[in-house]
Length: 208
Length: 192
Image (cartoon, rainbow over all chains, first blue to last red; front, side, top):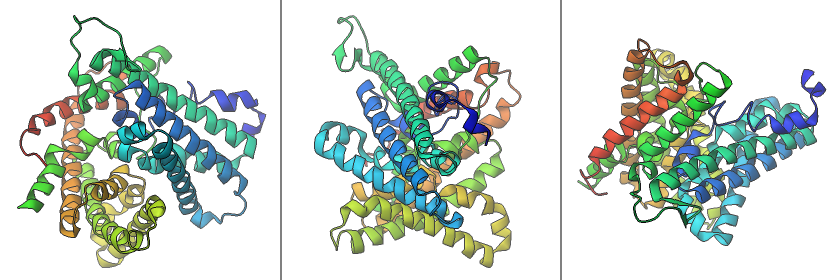
């Protein structure tokens, strides 16, 4: 396999920029748009997703020879749903406020195409340590975009950053930024700017 | 009366795609032609209504009765995956013509977050059985509406001179923002 020739660091770092799950592959857009009204929510969602994608990819890679081909997708989904349940219970027990703010979007990590995509396209074909690094890179790549989106929307929409007030009384918050339209605008502009920097002509989602 | 409010709320005021960001992937990926969008929307509405009914039964008669809340997500996703498979087999046998129109979209629906989102929201809002079904119908209608509107706009966008970096998904997201903004105009319509 050609991928074996790649250094391990490539497996890890490709998720940050070159194959970033949000800005390049446009995967997992539901949580990206839904919970990034503040930076801390974006961070929490990113971390929860990273936990699930790393655990699921590692486990899928360990059991890849035991799973019959016909039922592999169903198996992966059950594995993912189990890890999501753990993440959900953990958040509810340790960080009730964040768990409440994220609401049903935590269980919706189950259907984040990013996670199933990594299990199917990468972890099921590669050794454990590579699957782990790949998933960790993708998870952190997902997290930084969510935090960036959260920071932009929080600064413009609330005038604060990680709940610390940034401006004086002269600042009028742009309410639209914390409402649904603000999420669409911000992500559209971020993807556009990144396409402009990398010289790419437009982008399409690889998931339906 | 109550069920009509649930339907309208899910379809228009709290549109699944434009307010809850559920089903964004097909919204960005599939919505390029109006008739494809309409078929996708119909397939999704069908699965959504079935899902609403079946997950309500499973939640109330299995998960609550035997006190298994930690199995909720696993049970829901398995239900949805099997339901999609079942619907596909049924349509293939019952109506080959309908299968040719909807067929290719059905497998994709399993990972459409709108379906799982629907099941989760129905539980959170404590709908009864009939309300759940209307919630599913309304959510499906809202999804179809958003998909078809977007497809119509994108057909026109083909002719527009969009800056290269914004072609495809970025311009779709910006248009979706405008749509979401106009759908916010319905916000005062009802309070459910």
